[in-house]
Image (cartoon, rainbow, N blue to C red; front, top):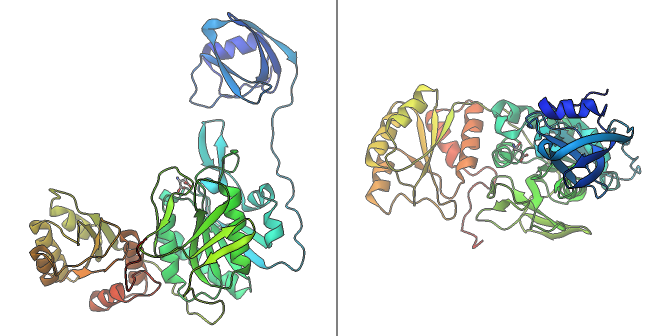
Length: 436
Ligand code: DAS
């Protein structure tokens, strides 16, 4: 009797009685007639009251034990297995693109053991699953780490930045980083600061659906990211994700002006306050924004990050102690996501003033996302200016947090850190609001 992963209790005994194994073609006698299909594994947390068959149609059906009279093995089956085909060879003339994996849905698959999506795919597997990549570039794939992006930290940003510098030194034409979508915006911002002036395109790409599902956005996102990284005439750090729900166009967003605005849609990412950097269609780049930095030139990367920054989203009745806790936890820069034009309650404003007096740097962004902070309009804002809080114009809060950790990574503190937070490095603030 083969092993029956995921089956337990009554369902396990039912299948053992039929001497069934995963992959066998079974005839199951039910109250409603005979159901024929291939026995598939159950996920770890499934109950012990169902047997799951894959029907000829390809759909899976769960049969409740209460309605079953028995089963017989119609034909012994092969245990399902997957081994990726070798990546196809790329013709010599194609550009060289480093494909660096960090994990996330794009490099995951459904784990039938648990039923969950788990990081499980090497970059070369990804490469062989999307053979079109070999028509776009000579891809040099490497898994740097394999984590869901909610677990990405500044130390990972530093590793990614240093690995991109090495790839640029080795003469690649572009870099693609596969990454989870949850914190993709934070990492894109962080790398925009660390790699300011990078002479090639560095494209971060994720997916909202794992590549082993028919509706996955991973293949098209990857092909677009690799094509643009290898051939675009512009340089800099970008995020590549679906432009709309249909599978035809990929949007490229500037690394410091992008955020994930939907939990599950494939076009979850938007550019805030600026036009898209570029749009790619199946025939290649269809639109490129003006003013993107050209390829080439030398750059002096600053790939270090330090964790001593905190992001506080102000909310009604927020206790001023939240500021003190951030300081006790080691924050030397606090980015506040204030309401409206950049406001907090009076007692939180006072606490921010004490934090600044103690040598900390307090910066203000807005929960409105669109528009820009202005601390001169209301008395609350004026009190904050008096307290030494620094308005960050229309910088996104997540971008400001990544920038704060990068500023601290350069060793700056106090006034120097304050100046660096305000000085534009990678398009994180805009001179005028784009009506987008
Ligand atoms: N948990 C999500 C992440 O890794 C999965 C994804 O969307 O990639 O960001």
